Amino acid sequence: MTGEMVISVAERAIWVVLLTSGPLLLVALLTGLAVSIFQATTSIQEQTLAFVPKIVAVLVAIVFFGPWMLSQVTGYAQDIFENLIRYIG
Image (cartoon, rainbow, N blue to C red; front, side, top):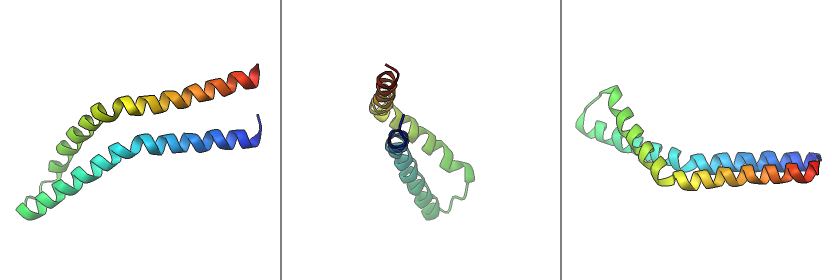
């Protein structure tokens, strides 16, 4: 296994992680921003208020983006196994 191949696999791994976690992080960010604006406008300073909407929003995002995320990760794993079989065989 060459150094270029290892760097390519690691680069693709980082890209897949960023790509699959991005939608969930964006949903959590936007939900947190909306809850913060709501808290600021209503003067409700309850610290635990931000957690429940974020959890619900991320769970809904997992249901929505889950199949796509799974296909990305399984595609990457399949590529790794194919490269491993080519390298060994």
